[in-house]
Picture 1 (cartoon, rainbow, N blue to C red):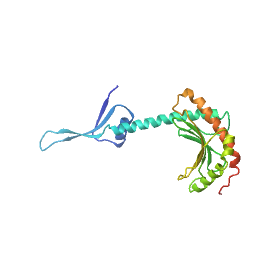
Picture 2 (picture 1 turned 30 degrees about the vertical axis):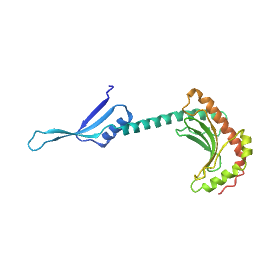
Picture 3 (picture 1 turned 90 degrees about the vertical axis):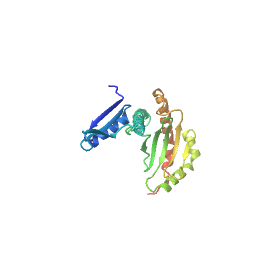
Length: 223
């Protein structure tokens, strides 16, 4: 009806109805109010209505609603990005062919060694291919040792990859990673540019896996 506001007058507000009005205030541009009505009187005076606001719009609820909407849109876009990337990657390698596209900022598969994963990462503005090193709880020391073993072969690895990589030991954090980041666009880029962006990061993943795989077999690992 294109109304700007709606008022629901009740005698006994129920929790599910309060939640529904709160959701409407978060999710729409209109303003929704729930008002409880009671009859009161002073002494022998005629009864008069007493209205009590139970729930209504606020700047905070609108901001929450907008944030939720942006998150939902982000998830939808990323899921579409991953679906397309997985389909294209499967034409080049079976590495991620069995992965179900999700809605988060990364998508990964195991290298065959526990805690070492081949991850694709996408943000609004860029996309990456990486080896992510995280052997789990209480593994920080081992993760750093694995990273250091690989970094000892940095020149050899980057020569096989065909260019420089980003080496992130991430001191103070549990995990480490070796990453190639492709600037120039992520999932917020026009969809007409997605194919070229995805082909670039798929190529990077293929070269990263090929350059690191021989050295992964030589790693000294804890049980």
